[in-house]
Length: 496
Ligand SMILES: [Zn+2]
Image (cartoon, rainbow, N blue to C red; front, side, top):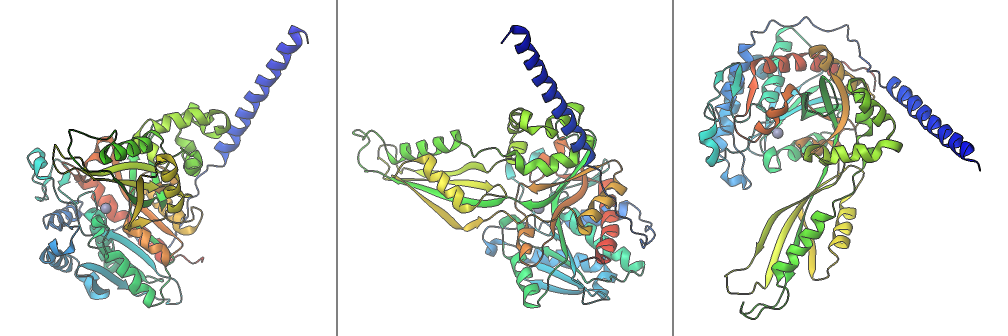
């Protein structure tokens, strides 16, 4: 073959690749149009003084409903106090809805619908909060349980996670009742009291509904917020609506070795064996899978930079590059693989005694599409050491949640209301990285969504469970409007 012929072939190949990339980009971009869902029956917007829901949130924050690993440590008086506050704040709601208290603190409200043959819809949040790390108390601008309203924010533990959603839902129902709204479908409100400790409140509520033969049309719980400038390569506001959540598994690794005097050690003690096992796990992370985030890429296309558009549409060519970019940050890496986090390490009793036993606990968050069994098998294969015993901690393990539809009225109503309140927001389905109470609801519903309709900026995310947790007064106001609209829409869904 002559040099010219070879050059022509290379040139032709390059042209073909460019053409394929361009065509794929155009096709991919076209299929990403959002679909707003009209709702002509919408009631007029209530006149709300933004300071009112802010004060209600502030009052709820001031009751420190901290949940504990051992439920006996919980202060039930605090939860009773919060229930009392809700009763006083939302009189119409407590007149028209029936309330049940389960497991000593969880709340289930029933708002009877006009057509009992239709499947009900359910709105969730949790009442409990995580404690405040005593070492950081000094660093709070306002004391963590003060509920201070200052500088345009409501400050305190639970402001973002997730008393805002509890107040938002209740406030919206109160306004809907005031406006004379009669839900065609039954509406449930379910507020667990031990979500932060993976407790029994939510499963008990699900059991109660199951006993009554209830199947839910759709469920919404806390989830990802509307992000402003958090995702690299994406412009404007983005709302990731979690249609699934990752699975959860903790494995105990144990190794035994001969005890004895530390002056005559064998080549490896149990501590060394366990350390090596952990090192192997950390240096062999679970594979990164872009397939998991492909629906999100597709939906984010309108907001992506031109370069990102080309890359998203042509993962066959740029997959490696995208994978590299996503795996560079812990938050984005966690969305494309099963994560490995050694969380506990124990071994040894005295500085001059050889440890006869060492153990570690490693926590895994399992990517949808993978299973607990597969994770355990891979862990054993990677450690590749028969001296290390691998046992699941059975009380804390569950498979990834099933994936709910992102092409049905329930989902489209969420995205439509979000875009009404936050114009220009790009919405996309994704997987929740952390655990929520909503995972229990898959047993009685095919459509379980996790979304918190507030705007969150980059440094806001670290405030959740951290220092200076706060929510803007405007965010709290918008949250009420969001649920005011969504409850009407969901309760009126006709199509099954
Ligand atoms: Zn939460």
